[in-house]
Image (cartoon, rainbow, N blue to C red; front, top):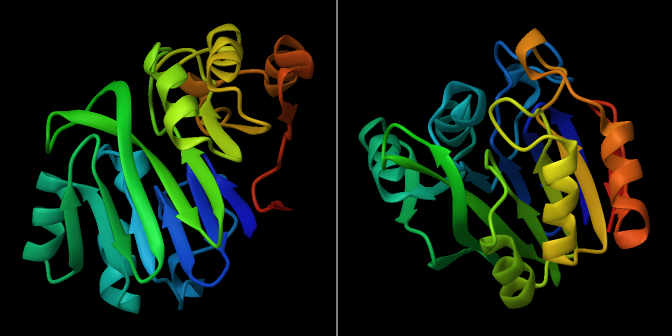
Length: 218
């Protein structure tokens, strides 16, 4: 699986299918692609409806025919705008064309549905945990135990989410082999240090600090 960090919390997964997670592209000052460059997508996963996560989710689905997967109320809103959508809730899983999406707890607010969630996306035998926006929670221990992700995307901004110290504890709870920090240095209010996060994690996980647009393979 090829994974690209588009910037902020936006991630693209490429394997047998193309999956976007939290595709905040339009208006994202660090995004490495524009909406006009997205011509292929099979699944779009949205963790909550804050603008820097929902982003272009509905537009990508309508443009490409992708299916939006999100908490029930967000999926309903997408369907009302003419997008294909699969609504679900925390603890559930859906399979869309060979891509399994499971929604897991996150500690953060949301508009539609009232809460944010995290997501575990499984494709081609690999599992990606995207925490969305969240504070540190003991639920991460169960996420690691029950879903055994191969890689985790964790926010580290320290204002709207965990800072480096708490995010490092999240890695310890998850017991995940690879980690990529996200949700920092997009705007002045979300400044943080991925280097500090990597130092605090130590040998508990392989921390990969990416620049927007860079890719990794798992």
